[in-house]
Length: 174
Length: 170
Image 1 (cartoon, rainbow over the protein chains, first blue to last red):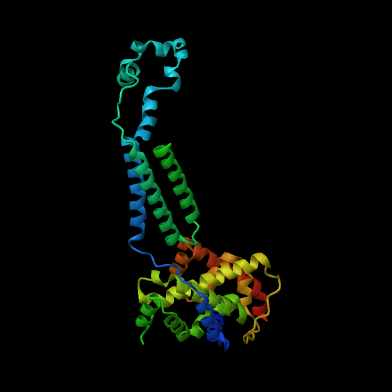
Image 2 (image 1 turned 30 degrees about the vertical axis):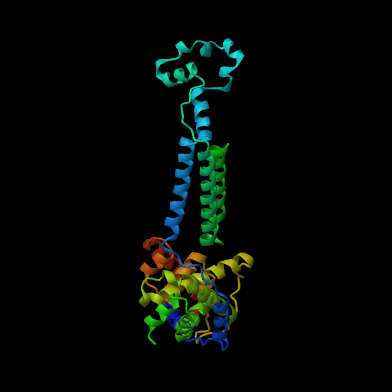
């Protein structure tokens, strides 16, 4: 007896199996409970990307032209905070600005003129940028929740967004 | 209403159209499910899993003509997933499970023996003999090279012959 033929014969026997009487009702009930994920919208991912890009843009604009952001940049250019302290005399690297290497021309300039207005900073810019940044972050978060509700990827994305928002607000307003 | 129209309606979210598509080949789907699950209750449950999956995934189906092969593939996956789950919870007994169908004239219940094979060999044999899939299709479904599928089929048949040898000689 050939096992191959036997298996084929056995398969045809099972294919002729009569379904139970209530099967269609069962399937109908299962289907009634079934829900469908929201259909993918073509505008969804471009919108999230545009909002995220806008957040980064606002952050850069606010940090570059805003007073607060430039305060951070300025202090970074000037060097450590103890530079203007009386104790700074004890530091040979700072009391002798002319010893600064040629590659740090700008740093030397700030060292000579510590009170110079190098920014033309507008104090309202960080506050406005912070507000816009916050609004964009809220919109992005809302859009993520609407589009990805119930998916595992939502939580990591929201955490990343919260991190970006915190860093952005600290840079803009802090 | 023709099949293509029903598939398009189902893709648009029409549950009745999807149900009609499945019920049109109810016997075929149930037979396939039964081969894997070997009892009416589990076979019906696997079909329910399938219809729920179909409803949530049908918008991804590009070609309406391939609805039935696609639906059967989903049914096979639902059955395999249920089988693996039940095997984890309750390993297959050494003695074959009594099937709800009367044994054929030979006095053998081949399907029970197939189910006693190692999982990968069992899946290949079920897909090849009971689901009429080609070796190439099985290699796609199981995501493994064609040579591996052939080898598993050969080993499965060999093992089956070894187990049934004595009974065949009776």
